Image (tube, rainbow over all chains, first blue to last red; front, side, top):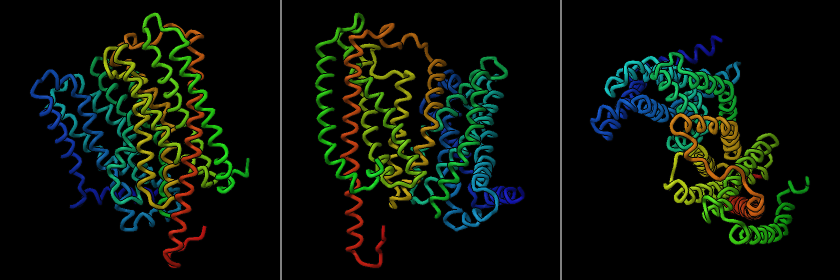
Length: 222
Length: 245
């Protein structure tokens, strides 16, 4: 267990230090919101009605852009081989890497989402459900990103291919994420039933994807 | 059956089978088209445009059948590391993508007279569109990896994970659709399908399946030939890079 904790701490340290680029995803997230608002126009009603959907879209796009960094840097400088030398199963290493990605990349997005919601005129009742839906749903994105990153390890310019591979697979999280945020905003404090299904999507990703990620890493490093 | 696992035997088998399967497909297609265009009733509501169904529905079936066979071939290639299964999975992808595209285009053409619009975010159309993108991703992954063996393993993992996700995606798109718009407007077809319409539908479905089989045999043969050429070229280039297979 302590080995996995060490991997997690290493990734957190790398992201926080200068050059880690942890803030870039947040900036991209905010810029996407601005681009959306500029494209839709200053119509507050239209923005407000779609605020949850726009925030989820921007978060998904920002997440997709960050996927190729999950294993790529470790693969290039050879530290991935060291990670695979641990006695822990590769699938658990993959799960840890996904958790590190979530903590360094997606958690900051969730923290900034309410502020950007303010810009979009998100209805007052929608803040809690939106943050909750992002908290429950985005782990599925990180797990999917780790999987795609492992698939694309031996490719040189993989980021576009990775968006093509991941976009169809992240539709369930996106649909039920926005669904849960909207259900919560319209008065259901538990955001049912979308929130339950969203949790199921995240949990099942937790089980299936690390195994697939481990297999992909093995074939790409042998 | 095991004999076919040998690429050379497979080549001989495919060479004799291709014209037979293709002829069967062509005959069934002619019969199916005759029934669907001439010898079947027009719908009491949709008129003659119901005939698009005979091209559209079997194409949508094939979209799923091709992805399923791709998943089975991927699993066989992944577990038993059999190159012929990898070739089958790879060769199925463009054919499946073409059927999926056909389903989308005919669905759109059918949507214009029926729904008054070329595209509706109908649950079925949307999940078929997502399936189409999954085919494209799978093909792109194959093309992006130079080493054939590695490409086969990686693409097989992607295909299988996609296959597990298809029911989840289907379920979520159904849920999304009912959240956004009433399903009653976009209900297709009558209360049930008459027997006179089932005959052409199944004939066309069988014809499509045989066409898929014939195209698959040709595509697999050409893929095997391509690999043989690549191997020979590598041997001819010099002894430093020879790989013995």
